[in-house]
Structure formats: structure tokens, C-alpha cells
Image (cartoon, rainbow, N blue to C red; front, side):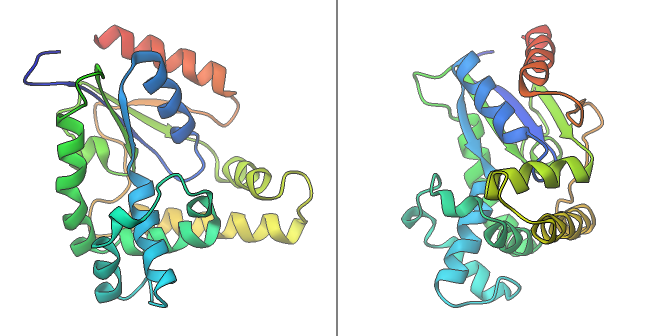
Length: 217
């Protein structure tokens, strides 16, 4: 890496695929600054709902982008399924995505002086936000596996079959919306390294990712 071009890792994939967990582990391992770009859209969705607006209304969504500084991106409520659904809706709007593109690119290319690079995880990092990233990883898993992970996150082992079915259906709807939206659809960049986490634990995924990243440094 050089002073003019920081080392960037782009991680993309659908909801509950494990990309956020992997991004955090890699950021710690390599001393990279981390941006969970999905949290930005979740924050917009949170702002819209908190204001009594409609996540499918572009005007309401754009208002939500203007007060991102007021939202704690680590707020656990941002990780709930209702906020995730709202995030998927606002993220499908080209105007909202354009508003947040500059923020994400500035972060990617301007890491803090005490960091050795940047990692961004989301849906369109390797294809739109940072097509020049030195490393691109696409994380995926079968939707049933992802639904089970999200189910355990929300309910531990105390949830019902009906609640699991709801989460599964929500993820299917989000996948359809994310992959087929006109603006920056979710897809694997041509030169991205594919990791399927369906039958792998985080340690195996982390080790595979580190092997690939290190080969590019």
C-alpha cells in the first residue's frame, strides 16, 4: 500500500451471511478501520421510523439521511429485523444511495493515521463503492442457514417455528429486493473471492479469508 492509495478490503454478501463478523475479525487482525455500510442504511431506516415516516417514501428516506450524525451505529436496535427491512427499502432508492456514496468512498480512501487500511462491508462495495479495492470477498450462505442464525440472534433458543418462518420469509424478500433493485444491486464482483459459509464456522471462514487477503498484500 502507499500513502496515496490505502489498502482496501471490500466484503459483500446478503443479510446474515456472516460478512459483518468476518469484517470485524479482519479489521482487528490487520489493524484496519472498519465501516459497516449496512449500518448506515439501517440508521436511515431507523430515522424514518422514529420520525413516523414511511421507509418506502423517498422524501422520508432522504430526510433520514440528513440526521445520521444523531444515530449511534452500534445501537443494538439497528440490528433488529424490522429495522433491517426498513434499511432494505431505503437502500433500494437511487437518491438515497447517491447521498451515501461519497461518505463511504471518503472513509475507504482516508483511514485514520493509526490504521493500516480500511474494510467496508455491505452489498455493493466491490462493484460500486470501491471497485478499485485490492481485495474483494463475497460471502454467501443458504437462506435457511442465514434465517437460523438471525433467529438465534433474536430469540436464542426460545423462539417459535412461526417466528423462524417469518424471519426466513423476510430474508427471501430482502434478497429479492437487494438483488433486483435498479441502483447498485447485490452481486458478486467478477474478481471477488467467494466464500460460502453454510457449513463453516467463523474460525474456518476467518482462516480462509486471511489466507486470501495475505496473498494480495
